[in-house]
Amino acid sequence: MALPAEAGGFVGVADVSPKRPLCFLLLGPPGAGKGTQSAIIARKTGVARISTGEMLRDAIARKTPLGEQAAPLMDHGNLVPDSLLVALIDERVTHPDCTNGLLLDGFPRTVRQAEALDQLVRDRGMELVVMNFDVPREVLLRRLSGRRWCPSCQATYHLESSPSKKEGVCDTCGSALIQRADDRENVVAKRLEAYEAQTIPVIEHYVKRVAVHRVDGYRDVSDVFAEILPFLQGEKAS
Ligand SMILES: [Zn+2]
Image (cartoon, rainbow, N blue to C red; front, side, top):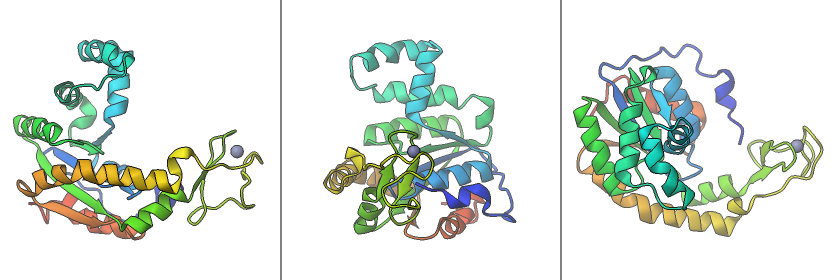
């Protein structure tokens, strides 16, 4: 999927420096634009963008104590316990790039993870900012099922937002484009249902505790960011 605004948008938007380290949570279904916004937010606020998957792989590769605990679980296809994931985040927060805080995209996935993360946020004196990206289901279906992919050079396209010059053919290498199994409409619909079933309790968990900012993700990247900006500056802090 193309990230047009990543290239050079938002010239003139002042950089933001948070008063307390932020713990930024972006919740929302796949295809809601969280990845694009999280890259912009990280750049504007200087918070570190953290993926729990990358963090796990990194801890295992570096053979840290937590990595050593996680490796056998991953090898056997077992889920890594919530306490271990949060311990990894707790360790990661001490790295110098987290001085302004961190941004988690797609975490927490369960209420237990959310509770463990709440404790970390309190212990570290961070400010929790929760955004819930909302996009109509039919738009998500179109965004996700319109993806096309080049199996030779891994270039990605989208039938509507970034089509190849010649339909079904990779601009870069001329190979035939495919739709990945994950992106087929019925599979996408199932993923969205699973997402909702799993995440609605997490959103309810936060609604009881902090202001959850609803972000309408069904707009241009720059419009979505303009809506988020005041939350970063603390003007609309909960
Ligand atoms: Zn290609």
